[in-house]
Length: 378
Ligand SMILES: CC(C)=CCC[C@@H](C)[C@H]1CC[C@H]2C3=C(CC[C@]12C)[C@@]1(C)CC[C@H](O)C[C@@H]1CC3
Image (cartoon, rainbow, N blue to C red):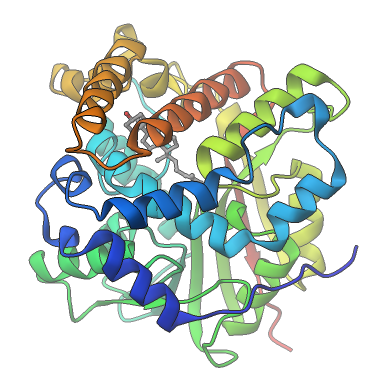
């Protein structure tokens, strides 16, 4: 396989765009209020840049060239996806941008935290360890794992706005000494070789144009003998790219979630081995016989709700909850309160959500393929 092309990094340009679009909205209390404080022209530029990859590009017409064009601009595509989606994520989901398993009767945020603890335990993070979180979002998992293990965690992220939010939350929770957040492209990390005791990535490395590329970077910065743990987004091996329905699901997930190139489980396993790791454990956690599937909140299934206190969270994710907010956003956009493109972003997230649920129900997709891999000592 040809090595993935890397996009040239320009942190000054990205910082200027962040300032222009988000202004001081990273200080806003919640996602919804932050959403209304953007610069309209900059937001339009982000919308145009993101949707040029998806508009009028139907699954049935997908060609290797369209995929290559997305892969070539993976960093810009993902950065703008999160410029547009972060506030909606926080409003709808909270500060840990990932799915999780649900035990019987388990409340939503408890299950989210347990999923983070599980990964930290599987890779054996200890008090005082120097740990890297690859693609850290607004730092929900890093804060939880720092509290759970006592480790010092560096969060790597390609989006300045998320770094601002993550830094603010860490400070607010008194974790500033244990956590730091660094801007950068995970395909070309600037950390020295052999610098971390452990590395984890929670539903983030799927944004890479090549899993082998990002796993190789992780291998380089991990100390010999160190462990990498990942929850990977992968199409299952039931996925058939020649089946138009399967393809629509995969493309809907990619568009709704800022992904340039999602691959199958077999390719994920091959990539981690090709990067040099010894794969100690791999398992699709979505296949565990849980009574409540990982996608239930997105499917808005109240019957599966673990606690009555989850009602507002789940309600926001039902088709009517989403519909209500999206209509509200439409009106705000029309009267000029919300920036142009907010509605388009919300619609695209909703399409992605429906495809995630279908992908989960039809066993074509998993957001929790667990791999635990070690960098050999010599
Ligand atoms: C993109 C990757 C790799 C991981 C993020 C996983 C999840 C946290 C998101 C996937 C789909 C997202 C949606 C929302 C929140 C975050 C996700 C579940 C919303 C519920 C946010 C509120 C909107 O009105 C609807 C969104 C649907 C999709």
